[in-house]
Image (cartoon, rainbow, N blue to C red; front, side, top):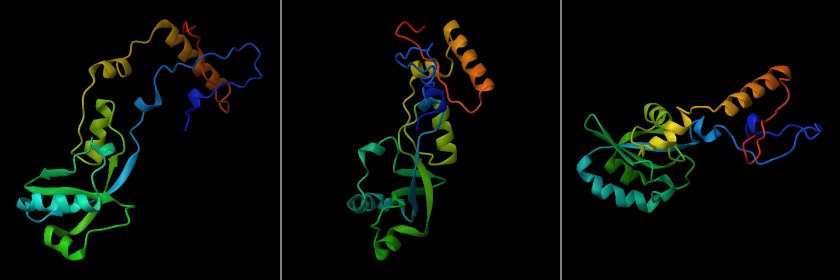
Length: 181
């Protein structure tokens, strides 16, 4: 989905020349990653974890695309494990489930993609799954959150604000050329 800010102004305006689009702040830095619903179970005996993981991996091998999410989470002397997505068709056999896990499962959300910024990571571990991997990227943080806007950026944002105030139903964008003018 394209944000309203990225939509181009109507081509009826003859004074506009279409150039390469360069967003001031990318949408991926303004919102949380998409979420995926997973089933979580609590392990009865943590000493059996080495037996549990191979059997779960046979049913649902942990995909490389979720390497930013740690499958196990230990808290208050208890161990939770992400089993598989809620939409997954297979499940653990009842006898095996009763052997390794407590009776109830629950649904949680995990980010489909790694969090890019610290604020996204903080929200995801507080509201969703607390055992996420995060590699801090100070350059990215500084460039996106503490971004010092240039005079040209401020002019562009002011212009965009005026366009939106004057015509709230239109979706316009600021277009800059390769020299960022």
